[in-house]
Length: 118
Figure 1 (cartoon, rainbow, N blue to C red):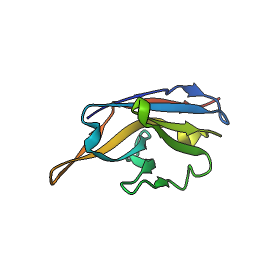
Figure 2: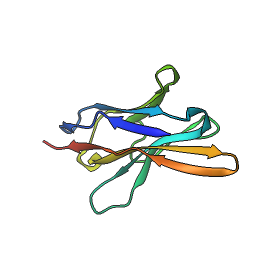
Figure 3: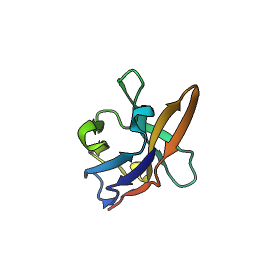
Figure 4: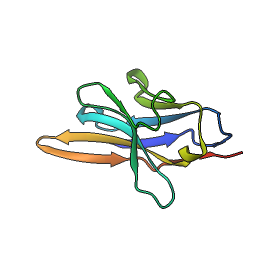
């Protein structure tokens, strides 16, 4: 599985961005996907994710502002981010969980920088 993020940028507080994650490789093995972020000096944290059951989870800090979606025809996952705040500044990573037989694997993209600043 290969993941490639795009869409990060510098944006003013209150602005919007849409991140994309293009997925390739053994897509049929993927059972969960999501977005994580890591701010300087902080641990990587979950932002939003699709679970293996098909539901969605959001971090409390982004609920009602961020929306995770996917386009199966394009093999792409998105993160629509609205009402951005300076504390949303971080490198955003696409993650996929995949299973090959009884073994699970975690895959990560290279990350895309989101900076929220005036």
